[in-house]
Image (cartoon, rainbow, N blue to C red; front, side):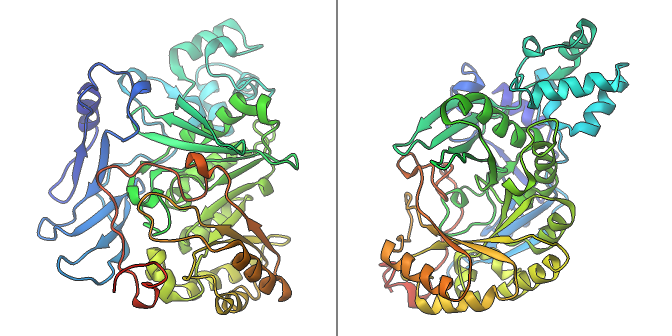
Length: 468
């Protein structure tokens, strides 16, 4: 109960917000590394006690996505983004620290300029900051403790031992799928758990798929992570360390990790401050040194944040499209009720007009009988016209409680051929790691409290074997 009590002291409760700390019955005797998968802390905001059916999945940038479900209606819930000043702030690149770490700075929460300034504030030369940076991210060291720092003087290491913390994550488990995909489970300081996936490829490219949030507020109906709702944002340190751990743990087994995709748990642009900062650390030439073109940030379509990302980051952008009409996208991706297809695609046309040699990646999860018809293919061709892009057709990966079925391979090939014939650059992405729930859309563990399933439109009820 000590962790739960500490958490409660750090949160300001008001009449309009409720913070539930769910402590494990064995928490007083079990360390964080032995915590069960289901989190001990759930964060929900109830904007009005008179509206018991309005659940808001809160976020650290003081905004939330709300899903309103009328008590006696089969109508689909409405989704909106709204300000919420009562939401506790986990963002800004700062670490979420436990009581023992409260007086120490988390090194991986700083970009290089911040680290250099911090080192100088303790009376050491900027050159020491560069050497420390290389120990954290470069030279195949990936230091996790003071003993792994090479070439630093004794006084500097003494200062670090007194004032710095090296790790934001604790390794909990590594699961290996039959195709060689690895799913890594990390425990956070507050007892929550995130998942990171490493995907080897025969062509010499190995990708690490990082999470940006614990859970997700978007409630995409085909995504297992979406069932969780949003527990909290990850800090920049917690995001970066996933890539550091992947290289440290698996480079010897799978070879050099060359690509990063922000396609794990969460909506990256809902946590844009920490995601941009983490991506900046990943591409730093003296550190992890990923090519900006090989770091891809995915979004379900948060238009203002998407514009900001294209202005501030050199990394690649992927947009999860998944439908060719507002009617279908409103259902399977509720964010579309705020940012319609037309608005999203027009924003991309406008922004990419000023970015030379830049192509957006459209992700399209194929759902049998829902979005995989030739008519959908023709509409998709018209939708992306004028946008420099590539299209990934992704096989849907079933999960517990799923309403959807994957399109057949024949249907996917037919769909791909229609796009290719029209001049689109298109790829088929088949499942990787699905036997360990490591494939696209399978990450996370919803637990007892889940985001709502939305009403299936009548024309799709037969395709989903849903009673009328």
